[in-house]
Image 1 (cartoon, rainbow, N blue to C red):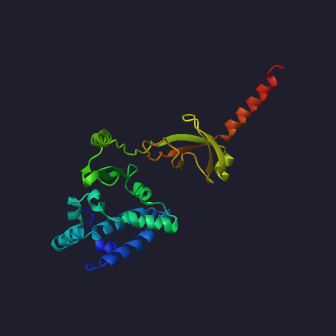
Image 2: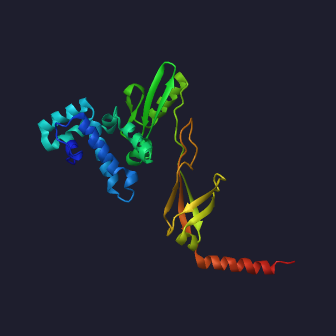
Image 3: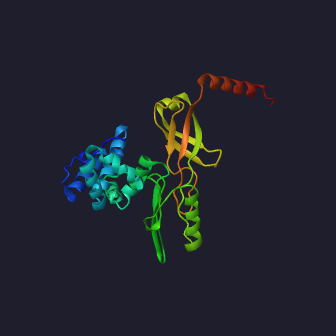
Length: 270
């Protein structure tokens, strides 16, 4: 397994205080936040390393375990630690969400859920539920397995469906479920593809009509992502996204079609 060191990633000595760990994380997370590095594909991987390092070193028990492995295995401590700790183990109980939400309010960045879903998988999402006598927080998808109420971790698939059924049957709790992403195409003229602008789109599947802003210099095969324009979610879950595949109308074919239409209009009786 790749050799890493959580202290080095945060630029810290192994005797760093909790305040120094938190300050280092805030500085690096702001510097490498995906919303500030949209043109840097390496920033997302760097952000994941920073998140993981902070989640381990900011929690005394996990930090103590990691320190013990460093003393025993030296530069191989990271690999030893990851053999016994899933992503879910590492992030459970961390205050990373609070820090990301602070960035969101202060700088207008996307929030915690959007960033983690992008970094750790499209199925990632969190939500809380409250009912008389029961409270829980559930993490579904993305980061390792699923975590249920009381800190229990569950795998996905059929067991997740069973958990959903049990919560609804016993307490009447229906967990939010994100809507499916949809795929469609939008046909542009060569001029629209070159200059960009606002183009009307009509979905044959849903009947929905939208005005889509097209960036300049689009090419056939590229995609536009329209957030929350996919299939509706369930039980308060967010809608999926709509992905529009760009197709550019062949200019010669269009001229032939226009000529035939004009010719036909002259040949029509009356």
